[in-house]
Length: 262
Ligand SMILES: [Zn+2]
Ligand SMILES: [Zn+2]
Image 1: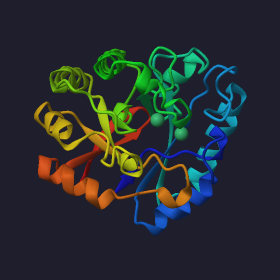
Image 2: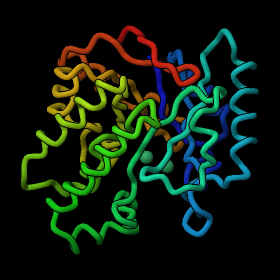
Image 3: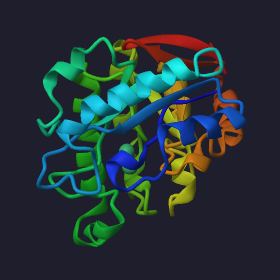
Image 4: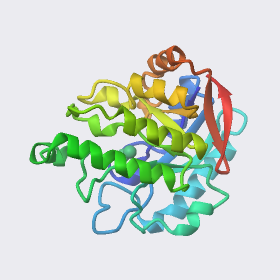
């Protein structure tokens, strides 16, 4: 079992040190733990959302240090969760930095609106719900086509607060799935949706079936913001993945994907 989506105290809205997450993962029998703290966004909007640009190197150093300490017990991977569209504050050299194992591309903003932030949930009432989904999936299509990332984070997080589209967006999803397969870009199966009003994992089971049919590789992430959340509800996620036909997960080293038995 792997968990490729975790956050630490550095982002300002999660708690726990790197060691605490690793110890929690060890207790749960996780074999590979990936750290994917939020890559820096511009200083005027990053407060309590991401680390600052000057914290990137200390973060990298801390993960590498713990990788050495825990070597032989658990694989510790270095990643970042990067906002797309890119906001320019994560230095572009990090997109080709061989020290980094993987990059998650995630969409948290639709045209400047932080749609997955509890403080801005009112935005769903101010807009047409199908327009929101249309914009969201257009951004994901650009993200998948960019060639910058190893996986797409929480694929259908636009459902987080329970606002569901009235139109069927599965054709748009399938178009993105084909782009992902062509780029060997993995989908993250993220269990944090179970903690919110959506009450299901990201993405939904019908989207997971489309991924399987289109040969999209997958991996697992808890999106833990506290150490005890590592591996949250992974048995349920694995059951859904097996039902869809999946027999393999993905791991990442030095920006290269490899297969792991499910
Ligand atoms: Zn976060
Ligand atoms: Zn995210």
